[in-house]
Length: 243
Image 1 (cartoon, rainbow, N blue to C red):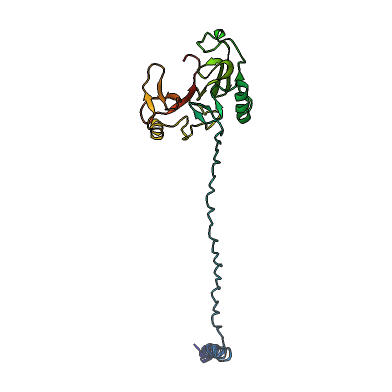
Image 2: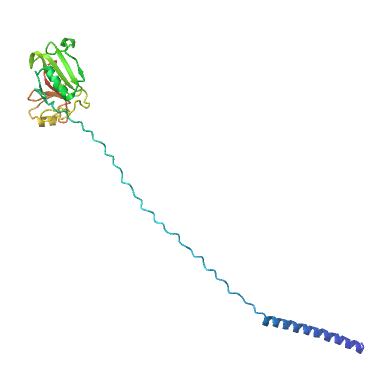
């Protein structure tokens, strides 16, 4: 190799080395400048406040009012007792046995109104019944029956009041309501009440026609039986048919 060739090669190596060195220096300077001239600011993380939660207003329920139960009062029905027709062995109120028939009818009608039925004056033989007198008459106000004749122990030869019967036939509500004795004994009262009200009353067992009772003044009647719990079902005063 010639001297010139050697120098040329050495020069090229030196140049390459210099370029490498210069490139390294340039890169280092560039990094240094970048490091010293440029400041990177990192923003502090933003803190997001937790959302405020507003509590829903508390609603207080109004107290429940329970209405007081409605009490329905059943109407009380009171049937007024009929006055002026006291039951006795002498007659019916002021209508005494033996009194004029027309006068007695007017008296009773003034209290009870028109009768339910009236046979008018008839021959007792037309009924086939053993009734005193030659002409008789039956007048009733539902459960009150009056008997008239022209001949009885109370009077003879004139039409007069002879007997009454007071009592419902089958224990139904009695009409007219509330007829009673002077001591307020009436249909439906017990045998215990009967004896307590009239200590001398006679109570008779059933003799085929039913149990009966009798009072001192001649008033008598029929009973459901003779125990203290049995009751009065009818009153009879005076003399009627079949007696």
